[in-house]
Image (cartoon, rainbow, N blue to C red; front, side):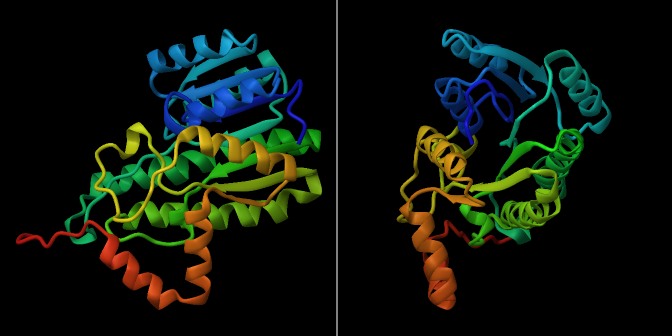
Length: 261
C-alpha cells in the first residue's frame, strides 16, 4: 500500500502502539491522520507532535463502546475531511488475573472495547469503503490471539476473536477491493502493561518496533503481520509442539494460588 497522500484513522491513538503507529504514518508522507481515543488531552499532545511533521491532524475524543456517538462522529468526519483510506484499530484494554478470581465488570470492559468497539467502527467505515470499492483495514490483535496466555483468559479470548473476525472480513470484503489484515505484536512496553506481571523469559518490544513492522506489512499487503522473533517461535511451537508450549506457558506465567475464590 502506498501511503502518500492518503487519509488514515487510528483508534487508541493517544498512547502506546496506537500513538507509535500514528507517528510512524506521519513519517510516511501520509496526508491526513484522524486520531481517536477517549482522552482528549493526550490526543492533543499527540496531535502537536504530528503537526510538527507537516501532517494534517484531526482528533476525535470518542468512547468506541458508545455506538450512537461513534456513528455521528465518523459520519461527520467522512463528510468534513473526505474518504478514509486506511483504518487501524488499536483501541483496547487488558486486565490480568487468574480466571477464578476475575471480576465481571472487567471482563465486560475487555469484551466491550476490544471486540464490540472494534465491530462498531469497522462496520461504519467498511460500508463507506465498500461504496468506493477501495480501502484497507488493520485490526490489532496480539500474539495472544494465536497462543492463549494463563492469567489473561478474557484478553486472549478477545484477541483470538479479532483474528477470526479479520479472516472472515478479508474474504467478505475482497470483492469490494478492501484489504483486511491483522497485526499481532508480542508483549510491548506500553502504559497498558505497566501494571501487569510479566511472563518469565519474555522480552518486551517497543511500540516503535511494532509500528515499523506494520508499515512493512502494509507494503507487502500481508494478511497477518507477526511482530518479532518471539511471536514467530511461539506460533511455530504451537503448531508443532502444542503440549510442550502449554508446559512452558505454565512455567512462565505469573500464577499465584489464592486462598479465596
